[in-house]
Length: 193
Image (cartoon, rainbow, N blue to C red; front, side, top):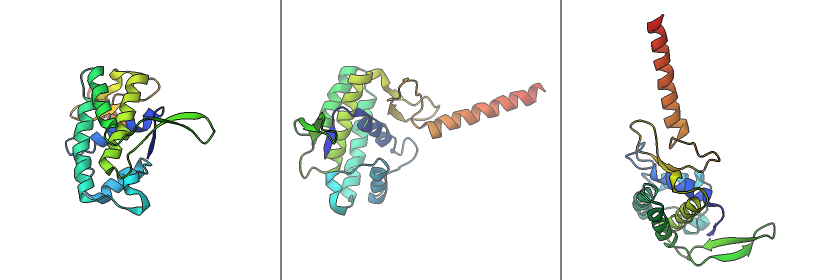
């Protein structure tokens, strides 16, 4: 796998999405190899570890579960230096030295190739680590956040242009808050009338 150094959004988004598959957030979302396959496909990932139609194994699922705890720890770091140190550890799991290659438009781009034969979780770690490092560099550590929804334990890296995202999963947590606020306004409106 070749990971673009300049396109940090893929890895940074993946960091939060993977951390939020934990049973402590919205319930276990990666219980089986099939669920892991769907997760990878949903993110458009084509990892070398599962090339040629090889499916993730139970061992891959266990290793990804361990990785998501580590990723969550990096997203929850208190300082920028801690985030950079954690991101560097992740990036180094399967990452080789950066290379400068032409992209499809013949422009020079930086890439980090992964080690041939690297396990699935190590390839994911490298992709996420590079994404987190890129997010710190481009956006700052203050974009590493916990979900603002009451009771939610989700985390995310806000890569939005305005930097005002507050929910780990806007369609779930944000919608839940909006519905609760709407019901409260209706209740107060009925009580006043």
